[in-house]
Length: 400
Ligand code: 3LM
Image 1 (cartoon, protein in one colour):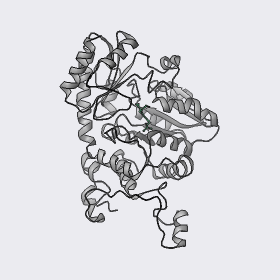
Image 2 (cartoon, rainbow, N blue to C red):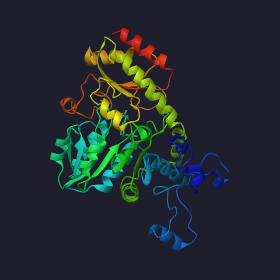
Image 3 (cartoon, rainbow, N blue to C red):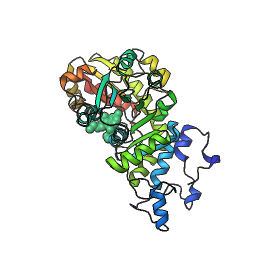
Image 4 (cartoon, helix red, strand yellow):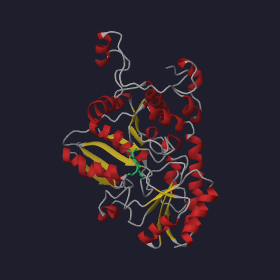
């Protein structure tokens, strides 16, 4: 697998997203990487097999530990995130649990921001506790809360930015400065941004995780996850978390689909961001709407931070209607083009109600404590003609 310097180094983002870590001439000229559909790999002889298992010789052994199609994708994402090594998994939760299983032991503590994707929250709050790993939730917009919570038991500090579902931002460089003085690994879920909008490793984070189901795949047709970090960290995730604990290896077919999606990542993200900014501005001016949460709006308390750490403001919007939860559900039902569905980052504009869907893992009083209300509606702005998206929201809002 040649990573030809002529083709790949110091090229722009889109060029690397299309070419990095693959040279067609290494594979019979095939423009696209072959999909290696194999669970196991033949050894030349017994000693070679033994050497591979012992890590004394490079080479593939078994799909759960590595596959040539997946390797190309892993190198490509690592390159785009600015990390040494990458790992792809069968889902975003597969990547997050691979990190937890690999890095945590009984007695450790994880400090997480108050707002997280619902299943990540539940994993920390309910399930890690069963293994004597304590989760401490702090408002990471308040760095003093973080400083006060960190101790020698802190093994992982975790945040999303922007947060799912309420679009709060965490100052990644500021958190990294604090965690750098400790033994803790600072892990950022970069699903909402992708490396095109934000590169947490360059801001000082140690580990980036993704739900590649979302913008990286980009077409709502697969489930995948990823992690990027130092070779040492990624080796731990691969050889402990994936190989011996959760087994959440991505299929080579899904790896091919993610690679196909990533070829248009920059184009798609530009469009998601442009349409989301316009829609947020339109929604903010509408009389039925109480508040719009979007870091691109001048009114957002996170606008200055967004300009500092993101190159654009992303494709996700959250809002509260004046009529609260009932109005939110009525809005969802009145939309005609826009689809009611969870997930995000697809070509289709999607709308969902976090309190009863993605974030129903929080108790009602927890949702308030963790920064979002039962009336919140989340929009994943798609790639349709902007005018059609706005027209659908306009007609649906007018029915309220
Ligand atoms: C959702 N989110 O609609 P998978 N990290 C973040 C995420 O948003 C997600 C994951 C990790 C949604 C999925 S809800 C049933 C649908 C920031 C997923 C987990 O395992 O690939 O789904 O990633 O917000």
